[in-house]
Length: 253
Ligand code: HEM
Image (cartoon, rainbow, N blue to C red; front, side):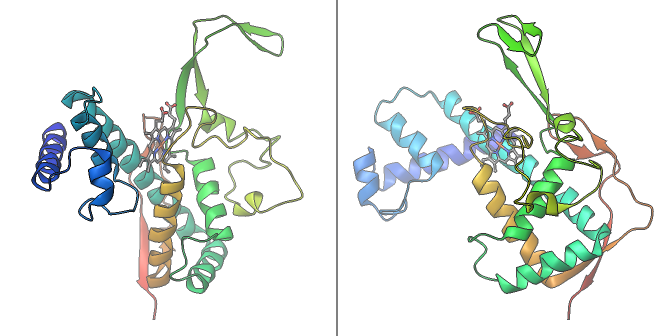
């Protein structure tokens, strides 16, 4: 079903490019239809590179689009769900985030120090991608252990984020950890978006999406706890809660 939808989108957009006589990047940059002087949309870039003879097959384009749609959607909605749960359970933290959301209304693209710390702290406790793998390209020395070349290793972000050396009382939801400028965190202490050359390319987009959605929600509703509800995080490809997310909401006056 999903591949069908992606194929449909690709076909429609290709037709649109052809109808507006766009055959290469130069045409596209001149046209208002695909964004004028603004940067090209991702799918347009792939389609135009195909029209220019760039060598991408339809299947390859579909795979790229699927990667962006699904890496981008499920991860962000997982973070959103766990974040509203945590805010519903922590009244004072929610109040600070609410005050910032009111003060920053319309300027969410700018730094929102507190809400950004809230989102990072959510992703620390419930990383949307709880583990990921790499294959060693050469022998790797870690302390007194040698990991041989060609071995698959898993990074358990969920566990990395519970290292007490970096995060005292790791199960406690405390966004101030990410505001505490006196204490330098280890550069790889927070790996919700992975690290290094293959880290998440959607990280900035995801943060912006979460900031916009959460601030608008906080401005309109008070999030209240459901007594005794505790989510059951499942370590699937993308983390979700086995028993859902339960909160109560009250419209703000
Ligand atoms: C809270 C939201 C997100 C989290 C926690 C997250 C996390 C991650 C992680 C951990 C990886 C590395 C996975 C691995 O190496 O196996 C990754 C890769 C990737 N992410 Fe995200 N992601 C998020 C949102 C997004 C969004 C919104 C997009 C696109 C619009 C996106 C696109 C990608 C892509 C294309 C890769 C593969 C990069 C590569 O292999 O070079 N992600 N993400």
